[in-house]
Image 1 (cartoon, rainbow, N blue to C red):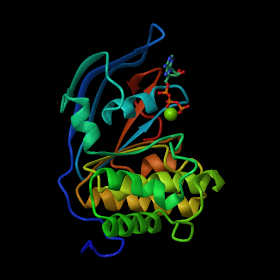
Image 2 (tube, rainbow, N blue to C red; image 1 turned 120 degrees about the vertical axis):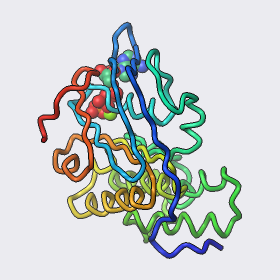
Image 3 (cartoon, rainbow, N blue to C red; image 1 turned 180 degrees about the horizontal axis):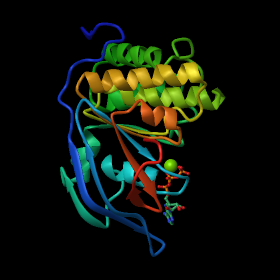
Image 4 (tube, rainbow, N blue to C red; image 1 turned 60 degrees about the vertical axis):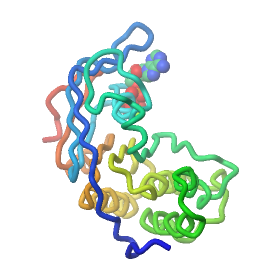
Length: 224
Ligand SMILES: Nc1ncnc2c1ncn2[C@@H]1O[C@H](COP(=O)(O)OP(=O)(O)OP(=O)(O)O)[C@@H](O)[C@H]1O
Ligand SMILES: [Mg+2]
């Protein structure tokens, strides 16, 4: 069984990711356009900007899920970044016919942990995301906000070196959003590098740095 104390994430080495001149082209258009970005262990970077400005695409690049078309990223191999990342997808990406707990357990099983530890870590992560009472409900039966918290729990459960969270509080009421932000801060305090996308200036203000995108380009943030 894990020796971790309930709710306190384990200390770890975070993954610093540094991008220079990142470009992603889709449909003949630069949807991410010459972006410089640094994601730093123990800190939370907020990526802000209007709908369609390239936030999700940039986060997917940082997490190693989408290849950049130009620019340099350190570490360079997307697979190296993906292997160390926990990702909260904007559309959650849950498997609908698995339960909440099974969705959170999946990445832990893939890491080869034993069954008892998988169960315990998933239980802790669900509680930290504010969902202690629904482990056996199917994902397809959950509300949008509940699904979002299962997605957060799935990312927390693996104690990622890089935590990439795409609008992790968009569906949540203020109290639940605060709980999720508290969990992300705890991940940073334990060593993780954290990057989140948000539309919410109040969420961005709680982060350590901001990167504001308009049409794929970094511009001065209107929120600071
Ligand atoms: N595969 C694709 N082909 C063409 N255009 C794409 C593709 N993927 C994304 N885009 C476009 O790239 C732009 C950036 O998309 P992205 O999802 O990164 O924005 P976003 O800032 O996350 O938006 P939102 O706030 O709505 O989540 C959008 O205009 C989108 O329509
Ligand atoms: Mg998005």
